[in-house]
Figure 1 (tube, rainbow, N blue to C red):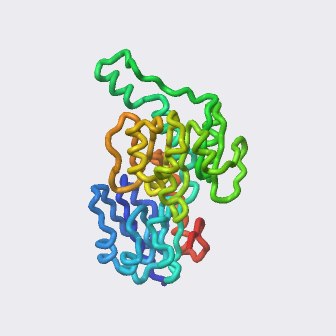
Figure 2: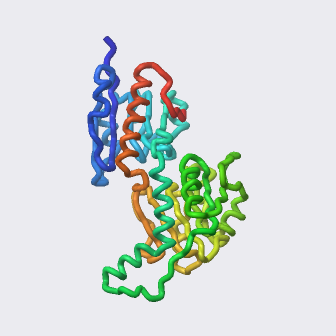
Figure 3: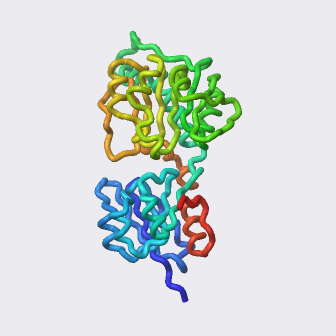
Length: 312
């Protein structure tokens, strides 16, 4: 009888049910480590379980130095669309398969991107604070009307397409920039400089890679309208946080709404900045899809089938 493959599930976010792999108990020996305190150290866990063959995790340091601590590793399942935290070259050299979970977000992340735009455009957060402090007039504040305005989407994948559909429903004209040719109903492809200069709302909905790192810095932000809103659900590295802070402080753009991914918040408290942290995909429906998809990847792998969403 074939020995079950040891699977290590590392989760430093909101705990998830530990019965996800129970139906694979004959072929998978699952070990769960869930710790949202911020102290979970992947290297320490790898040293404890060097015979791990399947690793399931997200946004951990999966560089070569850490992955070498797992000499029997066969499969890495990144339970996100992004895989920039995995050393793909190292995995490729070792013959370790890497899979992500693409499309599990449904409309959740696109909805959150639009919510961030709306929160900034309508001054929801500062107005809430003023009313709670007893200011029933909120004098001196005006919100932004979105119907008839231009939305520019950078990254027209699944999430960007969802954003396009939603903002068209608000009566906005849609432009987009994408790394490869992409036709989307109701959206016009343009060059980046044009998108930044004419858009009233700019959405960042692209993954982090060598091409997108610090895609929006001081020069790019200077092209945006002073009345424009920036909404990002992209990894933090796509933005130059110092340049964005300066632009917000100096009023060179109207405001920004960001769903942060990193371990720290690099931004000061500003009235024209709305922040969430790894929250865009945190809906019950989305998380159920996510668990089902990564469990299906593990099931396919141990059954000898080609797993879905293979990156390496």
